[in-house]
Image (cartoon, rainbow, N blue to C red; front, side, top):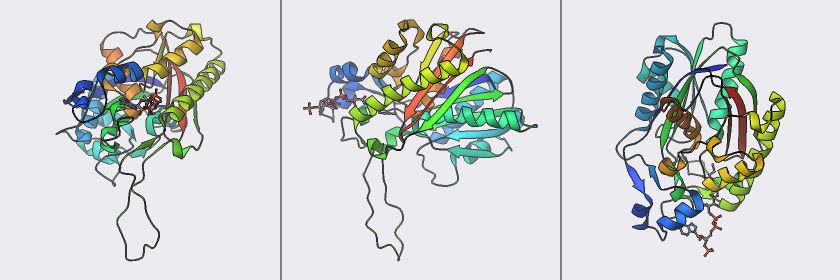
Length: 319
Ligand code: COA
């Protein structure tokens, strides 16, 4: 597998920490110190599918292909206004593609899972040339905006890549350890005349921040160790660690474990917050368009999220 194009799109509404001070018992100082986040983008008038289609078009343009060249679309998404069909179907129509689409919900780890699926498809399906991966997320719509410990963390975004056959993927690992209670949201479904059980609506995400923090650090460290071993590489041989943008303190803990310089850890969490599975592909797009990725560089990607899902991979940048 080889990445040949990247794209991203973000909502226009900037929500700063001081804007949150207007309705939450919080402060810019607390949020910056505990998370590294200064502001995030939150959907106001946009539709998530518009952001997703823009990110997809940007990635196709960057790859030098059109929608006719796309053979499969993988869409990573947790929540959007459509319960059905899958967001991938909506994106397919918007970009004028005719290929099959598949949605996955692996929370913030979705991009790594999507890469794993893409690698398997490219390796086993003869006619498969280009796969479009679109990660489109609006976690802001899942939050209880009275819960200061969770709503301050998230922002909305879409990130996309086009992948084709190649041998840039040196190692990949995904895993799931059922820990629903650490981070979840339950909602009531449509009532029927037959329902007798009691149903729960948590009215937003329920998160044990400290548990998630510990799980995030311990699982990422394990994943990174494993993919380095799988690729026969050392931490020093990685040029950039493109990590899920959740909390600067999580990134710092991982950085200390691999004992690498800060300059190897690109970062945009301060401006966008945690955008779930869109965080890594959108960061890759920022780096790609900012000419911060050099051909031949080795990147280590690592993410974690509700589930508890985790994943990491090592890939060579060859654009
Ligand atoms: N502003 C001000 N105070 C806040 C606050 C906010 N936004 N959110 C929580 N607090 C308070 C708490 O109420 C608590 O007060 P108390 O000591 O009087 O009870 C205090 O700050 C410390 O809370 P704690 O939960 O121990 O803080 P923390 O250092 O663990 O930071 C998180 C909280 C959520 C930032 C941190 O746990 C975290 O980032 N966890 C990972 C979450 C994550 O990444 N989720 C997505 C995974 S994909």
